[in-house]
Image (cartoon, rainbow, N blue to C red; front, side, top):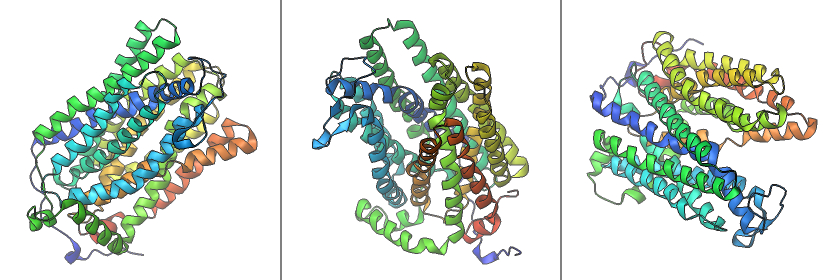
Length: 465
């Protein structure tokens, strides 16, 4: 079917001019918050909270074969399952919180204050991990829940600035530079923490736990300090609804009302929803690969911890170049085609991982390099593509839904992987099951008529898609 463009649907009003200083400030929030994702979530927090829970369950610190239980709110939970359950609960709460935060951001005249409130809440909760000692697993769990939810909420507010920072032809580059700087910052702090661990660990379980705790705290400090840059350099870009309200009324209740209206009206943008569905599917595959790569390397390929650490750092730093490289490619062929190409490359990564030999560090590191090169670009360009599909003035709300697709549905891939492993007892076959996410995601994204979808949202399409 031929696509038609209705001139009346287009909005030719140029976005407010943004300065280089303002854009640099926006990039720096990626630099600030990525430390939480890498140092805290990816490396240190899981083993740290599990160790604290095991102590609370009566296990000796450092004992790997202990199967004790803890009883949060009177519920019997295996100490080893405490952290995964916390992740699941925080994801569930995030699904409800993020769209509301987005609606509040759209109704507020002071969006930077909301960014500050959410970011500093998450950062200070992370710093609070310094008090999680001995058997204080409940305090650790509560602080993690607050930090993780605040992390997602701050990203919603942060992403909502993107459409105001550049026109349709500029956003791919802006998003890619922010994502690239994030990988660089997150990788730098992680490298510093790993050097500290290697330098000061004396082999005792107590010292290992202390070093993990201080590494987590350092990520909170990094997050808080570098958040000051965007708060200083970004400018407010209030929506028409916020200006019309003029600061009158209750932003919280108005935000809930606006969210209700958007949920009723969202059916008017079926192509935007179709893009979200495609993103939900292929991004779930991406998140699952990131989450399970270490387990695959340890259990199936029998690689040691040092190989996994080097590979994690390799992914972080190469993702910096990958985000910039795919961003530059998007400037030539368009973001939509570049994301489609990245999904083909992701499929090749899965096939390559299936064929990796056991006990061979170098091939695993090369695969990590391939993941790094394609990882940052596929995520950054998906973010900028979605910015083209958002009705004007509802950036926060729609990025709230987007962030749910990013964080709140990442159980689908692990579930498929786990079920296949249970049936076949093979991590390799489980890994191959993830191909369906990239193949189906590719087909769904290919089926989105991007130019028509952008115009239907009331926006002007970029020159190339």
